[in-house]
Image (cartoon, rainbow, N blue to C red):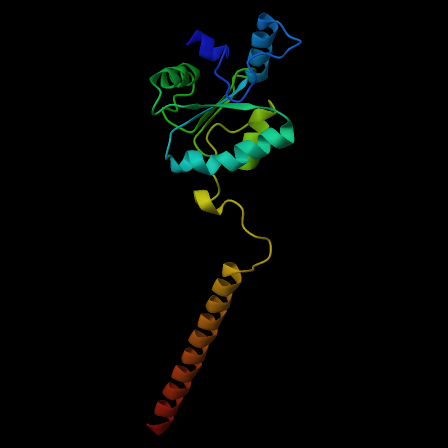
Length: 180
């Protein structure tokens, strides 16, 4: 576990066995440095909330120029033990779970993009801040288009039809009241 927490040597695919200008020790050190990060994400395969967070993790990595190391906990007991160590203060107990080793800040569960970015940047973040409504609806298009336009058009037509029915029902009542 200590090697996982310190991000010791890892198996890196598609790397040359050895760069010609580096010794074995230098090459090994370079690989460890490349994988070192203070940002850790724990996830589970087929976890909807975890999958929801992947685009935000990638976007934060790109915009902040950082690396978030991901550990799958459901199939790897050693990763689950590491999550439990990082989660000892938080008490989250599940995934997704984000831990910043430098600030010791954490986020339990799916969250907003802005909250994740604050966490990765070392700024104060909310440990329990779920996305606005559902996992799929965090980013709403600014202008309705495509299926949203169709839905809005249907709503508008339905509203107009209801108003017409109400108007006709009132006219009918007035006519019946006038006949009496």
